[in-house]
Amino acid sequence: MKNCKLIALSLLLVMCAATVSVAAENLVPKVDNFIILVDRSGSMDEKYVGTKDKKIVLAKSVLERMNAMIPELGYMGGLNTAAPAGEIQALAPYAAASYGASIAKVPTLIGANPTPLGVGLMALEPALQGAKGRNAVIILSDGQENLGEGSLKVAAALAEKYNVCFHTISFADTVNGNQALLDAITALKPCGVSASAAQLADDAAMQKFVKDVFYDMGAAKADPCALDDDADGVNNCIDKCPGTAADLAVDAEGCPIPMVVTLKVNFDFDKSDIKAQYHQELADFAAFMKKHPGVAVEIDGHTDSKGSDAYNQKLSERRAMSVRDYLVTKLGMNASLLSAVGYGESKPVASNDTDAGRAENRRIEAVLKGVYKKK
Image 1 (cartoon, rainbow, N blue to C red):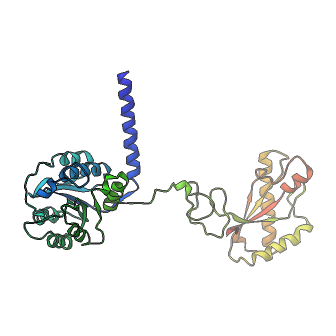
Image 2 (image 1 turned 90 degrees about the vertical axis):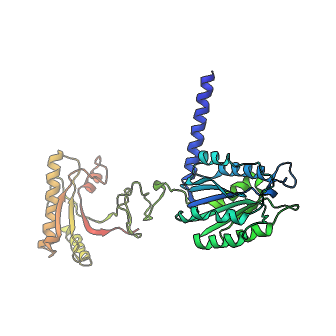
Image 3 (image 1 turned 60 degrees about the horizontal axis):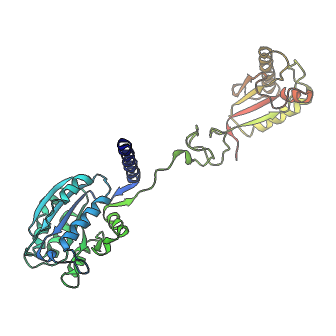
């Protein structure tokens, strides 16, 4: 029973991981490198107004929750502290598990540390010098500073020199803090994002902060079978003629349908000679083709189902050739542009069970090469 529970739990974890992976496929990273700077100055050892917890303890909790929401999109992640300045994790490929282990190393015991926030920012420069791409620095602080060079001046220099977006998570409160300083750092570039620790207590607000800092929503990958790039009514998966002109009619495979002119030339049973009553039909066709100079034409002969397949094949060929020869010798059409093909009984257009149907099947069709039906 215990093993069954373990198996079920394992399957659930695999399913959850797969869901996260699929979701991450549609996310586009906003940054290539990020460094989180945690302020450990003396004022961060005080209780955050409205809570029973010290600011540094809450800061570490905020980091743990944020880490659980950052998608693994190939970032390089680092983790530093200010007061004193120190590097807990150098820039390294971001993974939630390893970064979480680094967060666990952030000390929450502070005492009476001074507040050299600017010094902590200056200590980030070696890492930023070696970083390639878009950089983000996320500061967790109450904005207090009483030692060293002004943090706004340092941040401005880093923003300009290394294209850094500064984001802040504020622990400034009515008792102790400098919200104006944090706001000024955030505003150094339009990409800056700010939030208070109180706001980020809400999971939805935390998720939004992570999204605003780390990623954009990319376009969902479209199902190719739901697309029809040439708008011919046949989806891309089965379209064998992509790029068909928009005004052409197509068949079930998305290919243009050749223009076929049915010549009302019927034949008596087992005959291939052209009756006089059809001479005008052929003359009209010859006149029609003058409007399409240079277009090749295939004359197709067809039969009904009486007789053997082999015999009907030969008969259809004789009928097609008879019409072709008439068009050339009697009506002056270009012999080099006319071909004759027999299809036997393979393409009926009517029932072969009636005299009328069989008469329709004994027919001639002219297929214009390179000329297609319009929609």
